[in-house]
Image 1: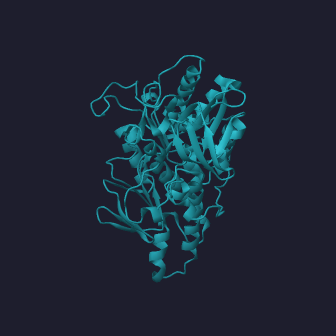
Image 2: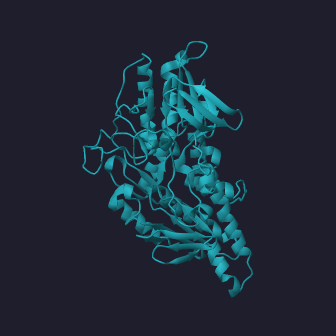
Length: 454
């Protein structure tokens, strides 16, 4: 079924890096030859790598939110969740806050709903822990930490309040990968600079604990840079506990798998990601929960459907075959770097299926990762070259500025970085997000088994 003008309808599910770059390229390649529809959970592209800087107040939420309607002119943006998707009948049902229930047909479909935070069956985790994958979570965490400092400072002096004060001044973060390590490092640096503004608090009173079952921090960057980052964190007073995880969470603290009890009011969970629940509902082959696709990103067993990003098991043609993968060849890592580059490939193949251009396969060699640890501390591995300190910091910030998909976003982020380097650190508790709305399931749109659009 096409539009009344006879144009095919090309639909993209998911407004993350993969979906955004796919539909932006489709906009350029197809022009007015097709109707483009973007289904997304929000009306902006979130530049998630800078979420820790929203949590520490260096950046404002809108600095890293790129509006679709500003950057994707001519694309119909539907904010909502997928209620039903039929790959045979080429239909989709959506639940949209404004339009209500919307049912559409499509001729070509690109599936890129991204991922959600991986959670385990740990008692109390869903009720008490917060993630770091959305603006809602980052904004809440900033206000929450300031609130704990406020309340700890307001407690009357005396041994009867020591336990509560310690609990309010303790932060436990689980997950020593890219997100968790950056978050703890940047929050610790921020709090150490502002704690003196409370009359009866000292930076040394704030306890930071980073927990991970893995044997090292930042395993994505290798053992050398991981060891360097671990040393920097510990020198700044951050407790790093490796080889353990959480066994229980309650409203007064956490219990680790080694039996250690840590009293805290702040638990941040960033122990990896899993593909969007939409993948499991399609009845198609998956690998580790990611939809199986070919090197051209086409979904096996579903004509005129492509999948990419965190939700797709894309063969990594830049890496030789290994025996540790059931499919014979490793799949690309679920990173923004791959998602951003898979988008234009999917767009080219959609256009080729409509008679414009030729089909392509996806091949990209990882350019390396960067991790900003706050202040002048950073680690980076661009093109395999290990860097630390101010040089790594410059590389990290330069990479983020280049990766931001709009000039206005780059200017705002760069300007706020400049302000943060010369002006006093901002501390303002706005209480914009309710606690329950910032819990992982609700913040990421998966509390009622719904399928988030991005």
